[in-house]
Length: 418
Image (cartoon, rainbow, N blue to C red; front, side, top):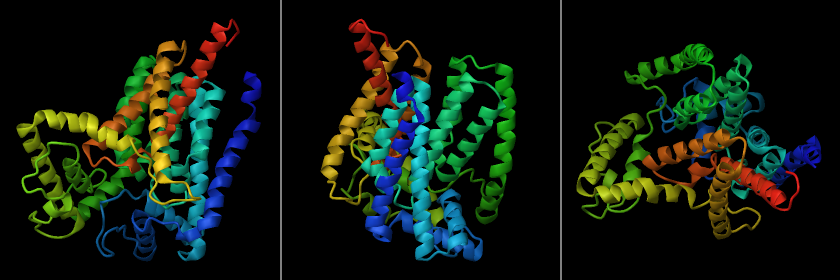
């Protein structure tokens, strides 16, 4: 049975289902499927990048540090080949769909590495038919390339721990840099990987050698970005300078936060003293205001501060599906109900695997640590369902692992062989 379920046919079938559904959405909705928000912003940024060579976002003549360059560069490459009109936009969406399908395969590889081919197939199938991910893969957002890059980063990390050496190390390094190009929130991932490799008793000398190589490569890759940012803003900006707004908005979530006038975040921000209105300065002012609000909140109501950042905001991150546009008549309320079941099933799967599995406990801990890391990072800022999109596949991996262990337990209880 194990050989049958691991046959490439089943993997290809799941990938075909993922591709077919996503292409069906593209055929049905075409270019009309858009958020009229960040997706359009990335398109405009890519077009201006081709026209002027300048990376912009908010203003057409203002160099930006609000975003990492990955998405505009990716779209610019497509537009260079196909133009930025209808053909180019369709080509970009097809590329996003293909990248989304590659994430399904990456998740299969993770699940197979952690709990066997059956677990990998279960997780991959959940991602293949996940409506929020089907929708997202039809939008020109960073979620799709970041999710795919994260899946392969995690997979090569697991391979590296089991098979120390340079080939798998280069896989980790490549996909880590790729993740960085789309989302700076991945920055501290090496810390999680370090503790995982310690658990796996990774050779210390080899780790030091690879850390030195990684530092040199990162310096070579990010150096031009640092120089570019310093030239424009006369500051060392390691990744982005756009965290001030979400950090400030995050201080208006939860309960017991400073609210002297009962104003919304937007109303409150109107009163801030902006020395200039360029996007970077605005974000810097909002970042400082957020820090002051957090200090005040902690001083006046520490219990509500802890409850908000440790419980209420993480719930906001996970409790709903990212589904802002309805497709094929699927209702958002139904998906939000399903979201809660999937998250609970994922957590239960991790716990079942940790308690009852005889193998791969360290890999299970590694996946759980990644989820906890991102939950903590996003909860510091404005907790939003959109940020759980790249994380749900790892929840699916937890479901697959839990199912695998449950089947083994039942088999043992019945006197069979796992």
